[in-house]
Image (cartoon, rainbow, N blue to C red; front, side, top):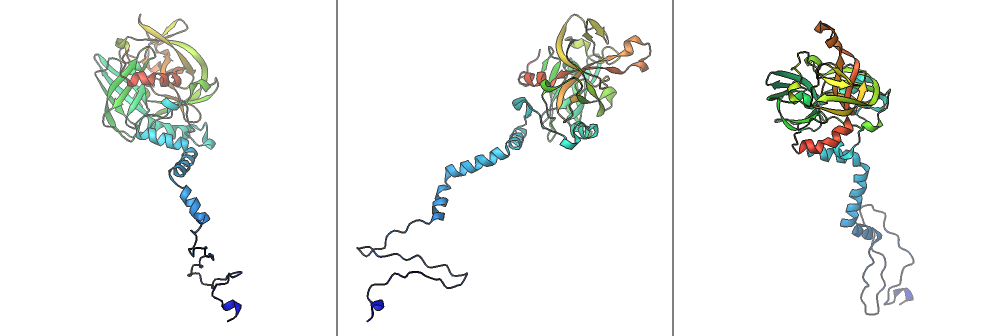
Length: 339
């Protein structure tokens, strides 16, 4: 017997597996121990990696994915919950494509579905105004004077659907109100922006229902900021009471559109030359990116200086409640506060 044929196997210097893609290669050579037992095999590198993918590794992977889609995930979750994104984040997004920034047609197409017409039946007449959808299930922000003293409220969306609405909360000191549609779902909420970044000269678009003309779009610029506008807090002075459909307000010590009465409140407003007419109250003032930066609330009409109602109309002096004021008031309105 030659040395190569001895009773102890000889460790090969190398091994070449047969070339066959269907055959797995044999295990590597393992020398016997002194007890004649094969040692426990070392785990393969791949096995170590797989063992690390336990709960901690999985959570880490999920965290990375969540970070990559953070904004979209937050929007989706809050929208499913029926809440607006902006009241918690305080920021807006680019609603229109970057290349369409400032394009009135693009802004109108993106935001018009989020603006509604409001018709309130009062004890002695009716009130027509506008509102801005802030949740998919029908929360709508409008002016307090649009729904003050309302016995019933009907709302028409941009697609022509009609809903009955209930007043959730009001704040006459800011001329704001929150109403909720009955049985609504799938509405398109507006993106509420950040009015602290608004500058004089910025392009703006106004959307509302002047004279009941649903979805009317006008455009202009921001004419001034922080204007002290004084309005009545008396619900008996609501739209429709004065005959010309105007809400009386005071600015610079002068009365416009009638007498505001003895019960008033003053707020800081954005002034715009975008055309506002009766029925625009409660509608949206929108920036170049498609974010709502204000709720239109007052406009000066020359009708009080004319004997003909046909001469009534916008002369480029309109005012809007800054959207940051709206956002800071939402919690109180949702809680059912009436003041």
